[in-house]
Amino acid sequence: VHASAGKEAILQAVANKRNSLVLGVTVLTSIDGDECVSIFGEEPRDKVIEFATMLVDAEADGVICSPQELEALRVFDPGVLLRVTPGVRPKWAAIGDQKRVMTPGEAIKAGADYLVIGRPITKPPPEIGGPVEAAKKIAEEIVQALERR
Image (cartoon, rainbow, N blue to C red; front, top):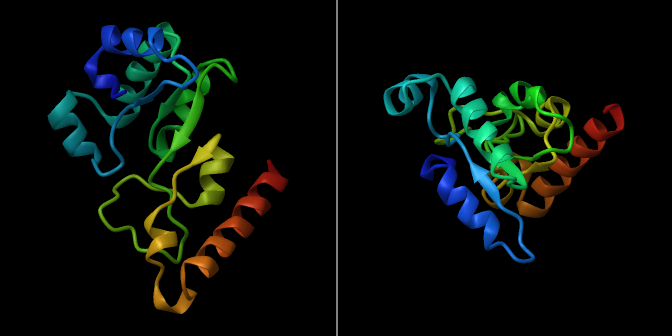
């Protein structure tokens, strides 16, 4: 559910989730700081905290945010919200339309529980090879980051 739908929408999603998880989308990773201020009147970090507070109050299961806002979520007790992060790009991948990104290793270090990685795998640069090679390189980076966690 998009957190901008408001607390009532989140409460409804939670009340009707059955065997699903309710994750709240906060500020899209394709939006930079200036655009976030233009849309929401706040910087991404502040808006993500506001949305995450709503998600916690509504007893949602998790939050979807840029890895750049993960550190700000440490104000919540560990395990209160699953932290799902799109906008994850290995150093060798094109950033594309994403504005607030981190590498897989950086996102894990910042506290991500789940990484959303699409185009770096499905459309890797030619020097990486194909999707299988890209996925293997990303998996190696994830393993290294988890070992250091």
